[in-house]
Length: 103
Image 1 (cartoon, rainbow, N blue to C red):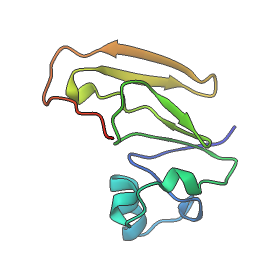
Image 2 (image 1 turned 45 degrees about the vertical axis):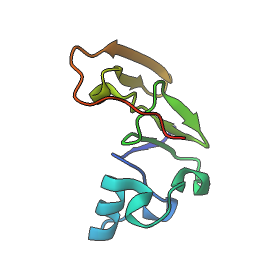
Image 3 (image 1 turned 180 degrees about the horizontal axis):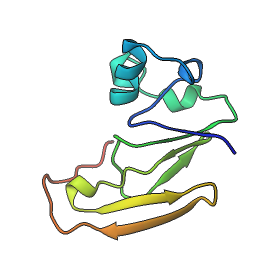
Image 4 (image 1 turned 90 degrees about the horizontal axis):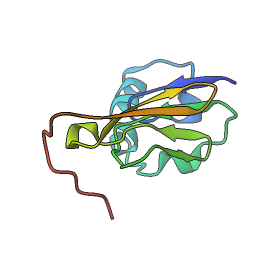
């Protein structure tokens, strides 16, 4: 099982490539390119592990895995054991900002 790990997202045609645009996309996700739901476009068999979009539990969607579980907001810090797809989460001890779930 191949996987790509990125901070905030990557499009299939960017995997294995490098440019300033790709680095910006990986850092900021679809908002950098006005593609808010980049994971919807993922068609490759390569699993993409990412974060930057906090949620209360890890989310597996369309062969992507978002492990950002809002630790900054006082929830949990989560790690993924890959390829086992086992999540290990630990409650954080400090809250830096109040979490507000996106609608």
